[in-house]
Length: 394
Image 1 (cartoon, rainbow, N blue to C red):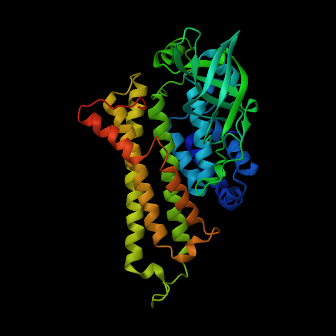
Image 2 (image 1 turned 60 degrees about the horizontal axis):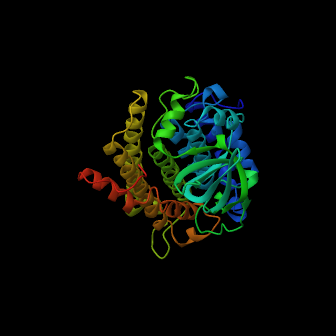
Image 3 (image 1 turned 135 degrees about the horizontal axis):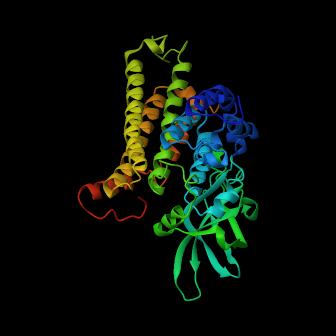
């Protein structure tokens, strides 16, 4: 197909075409603890990495709901590949909130790959013309294939004041540790990245104060800020990332059903597991949980889009609901996979059987701090009760 798709339907179709290769590469990717170059090439050729890039820079400028549809389809084939795509695309979306000079520089590559995170574990020291960066960032998903890195840090000013800021730094300026040895999403290569005395020009450092983002947006040319795409930083990142876990649940259901023909139930008289009422109930239960998660996120994306189209900010109540409902959708997806895995028999523990990887991957991703069920429901519940959310991550 063309270098990049023109709409979400053709992009989803393109992902379905390459899905068999992504599936086949799953075990190899896990063994090498990073995605095969073929996976990245196929996604780039399909147009996946252009999803959030503004059209003025050659991107697709898709809505968060459309991005989620593509990411979920990738996850049906391979969860780690989808998670990396989610990180790179969401980071590219964040750049659309940044000043003109940064956008021109980074979107010079429409398929740009950006890793990084929001934990301020670096220090920016003012220097002539910019800052000197030092620090280390753990769990840096996608760092092994990224061109740029989001280095959230603390700026230590000469007057003793400290503020949080995001530094955009070429990935080549970091050293990567070989410390990603995990039981879940092993192929994401989420190693620790370290910057040592790296000079960052002043224009590549943006304070995380919401007022700074608003000022940057106000100064942008009209066609540079995608219309109807300003969802709120954390609401966008949290809800977009959920798509990978819901897609993983659909992938687990696919894998379970594909494996059923010819399987009996060991130590019983059942020679066809599909004929057993319990199996039928388990499959239907899993499907219902996935459908409920999809419906919950559909409503979430509708809220985000309605506000963005109207040029309005989400209310506190809506932002809290995005976080709480996103985490609950993840819980439903995880429960669906658990049902299917527990119905798969002892042979499912073999690494060549895909459902065990879906099970491990979704268990691990569900522990991510931004979508962790307990803390997310606490935040949502506090707001529902008229209390302060007690967190800036909304």
